[in-house]
Length: 105
Image (cartoon, rainbow, N blue to C red; front, side):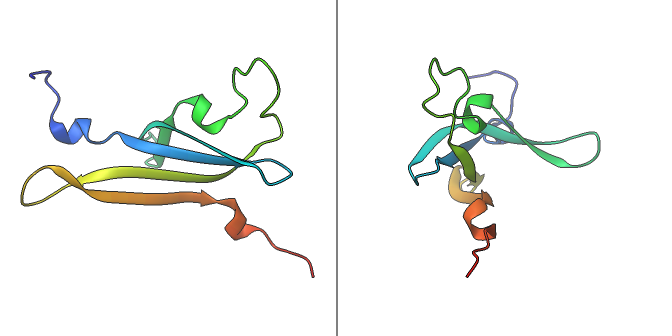
């Protein structure tokens, strides 16, 4: 297919998995597409759709209102230097809120 975009450009899309937890420990995960861009401040930014990071977005009821985002994972493929195919996994854990919680004794 000739669409004017290189495979490197197309393979820059990533899978994002966002996990949410409510106050009684129920966990719900959603996934979608994301990609990184370098913004005008020379800072790397992750772009995705709102439904990935806001579980209650556009819900007709409030069943997810008490769920809070606690983990964000980004999965992508890296081009294999020998074959040129996107076959090597590149996984990045961006946020894991539970790692930063402190517990009182």
